[in-house]
Length: 459
Image (cartoon, rainbow, N blue to C red):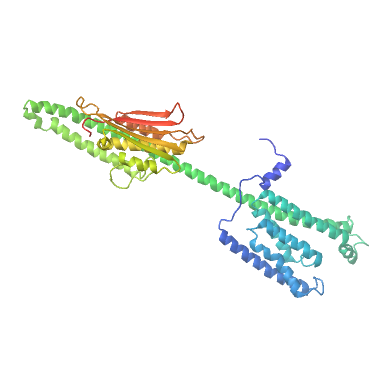
């Protein structure tokens, strides 16, 4: 990692390029605290200035009301110190300069010195525009040190203090008394101003770190929830395969035994009714299949959410079908979806069996969800086609039902999903011996098309 130059270190420490604005966690409570703090300092400033006037520190002849007003005016702006930190700093330091030129002993009272410190601290700690903060604070410091330099250059206070203490006759140290006094004044002021700036910036940096830690914690929680959801999806897919295996096994046994029973009954063999022969095996296998299927379905429902995170504990109402697809298309916020139904003959969509209709509905749901999450498209189309044929060989396909979801967008960068939705979609298609076409189109956009064969009897 390359070393930063001093100017870059200063800019980093002051957060000049940071994308962070410090705001109170509870604005109403913070404003109340500021009001009470400002009013408390106003009372203390007035009392402190009166004590200083009574002790002869403030110039004789200065009216008491003027001392009180000037002292209160210096502390009052702090009631909005966090709402307008830079404005408060400018007003308070302007008060220092103006009053310092007329009644110089008033700004030197202890309470007003604390007020100036708090104003500078608040400007650094709460300024939302960091670059403006550096400019305003820099101008205020320049004005303050210029005033200090002027006071030292034209004033005779240090000379008189040194003479009154006899320091000029017998210097007690190795440094000239006047030089020592000037240096001491500068050191005090440098420590005063830089201390307020340092404490304010440390407070701002701490607030930024807390915000970053909060955002990181929220990100970790979201990622943890996503991992948990994926684990649930993976487990549900495993259970679904187990359910398929259980039902397929027992249904195969039922089919074989039913064929054997049919032959025995055709021959008039009474042994077909004995326990352990085909009809009894059929009864046992069917009971076992239903029992195991109920157990597995109960496990699926116990997860509480389906693969998309939707609640799955709402009872045993019939699943959605082809009539629900128009409402699904119309509910896509921010996506203009065109819906079309092509049925041959008219009304053939009503003959699509419920399991097939549910699979087609889920296909449209997954396709539109992918467009919304992973595509730049703003328009999409959903087409449902049902072609019902009469006649044909017994048990053969009597036509097909198809849905197609098209969009004209491009893949959104950094939005790749887990792919589990398309895996589940392909599994549904395979369970119905259908055909799926999923992928980008040559002319642009993306296509999800699923065609399922219709059974002969429509069941």
